[in-house]
Image 1 (cartoon, rainbow, N blue to C red):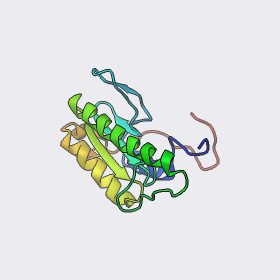
Image 2 (cartoon, rainbow, N blue to C red):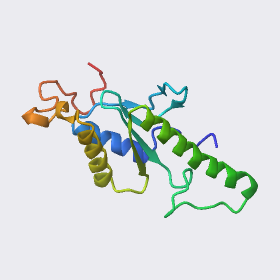
Image 3 (cartoon, rainbow, N blue to C red):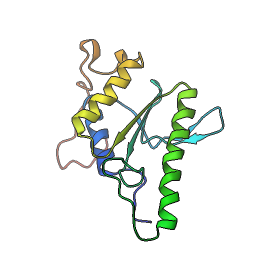
Length: 154
């Protein structure tokens, strides 16, 4: 299981790139230490807006549409997948109690639908008006862009 990624999965990367292109800034895999003592790591966290986004894999989080149940080692995988789902529910409840908005997306959700869902949650949080592009503001228009092939970080 060492080869299974915890962060930077293809669906998560696609969503992050799309949100970044729209001008939204966020923290990835950011550990939240909640007042209840629980620690939660959303895939994408908008800390100022208190929106936590999770991109769940169909296998690991038992998707009702695409999640498969392994036949080999059922004694191990059955309880493991159930515990993953239970942990997700407990984390969601802890985040909501702490005043966060939780967005859970399946990896098979189309990118445009996922982006719309996240932007809607940000708008509903009441603080999205300060997002780039709102009120006629152009995101990052004044910043110099690196040319393709330019590996410098300046």
